[in-house]
Image 1 (tube, one colour):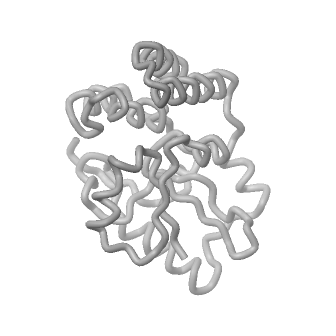
Image 2 (tube, helix red, strand yellow):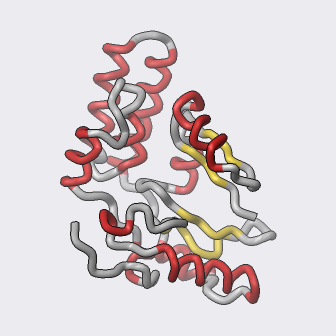
Length: 191
């Protein structure tokens, strides 16, 4: 069963969850605990976890629709076909060694960036906006391609996460997951 997790503030994501009509669980993780546990640095990210709790395919930046195909160069059809095949017959699952190879440990800078982001979030919730903004900025400096930190901080700082600041962030690029090389969803698209 799919489980969706938004790394946003509940008040920002609730309207999207309600409009989606999803029949699967949709959770909100404003503290980014999931991103830290699974070393997620891009959104959306999909992880396959089997019924025994084993990761069968580590984090992979993929999509369930073609809404952003022109922007990302990725189509949803091939990935959804892989996912359906895995559910049906287990094909596409990686061995434990392959999962480890494709999910490297976070760097020291990434870990420090996540600590800065956590401190910024705590300060924001405590009403200390100026201090929070400094720590959000430092987190972004330490992990400039981590969209869970950079894009995820935009609404907290009063910016539209799909507005001009997002498109400036997108120009810088994003962290490439190792799964990019083995997941055949990239197509030539005009950007």
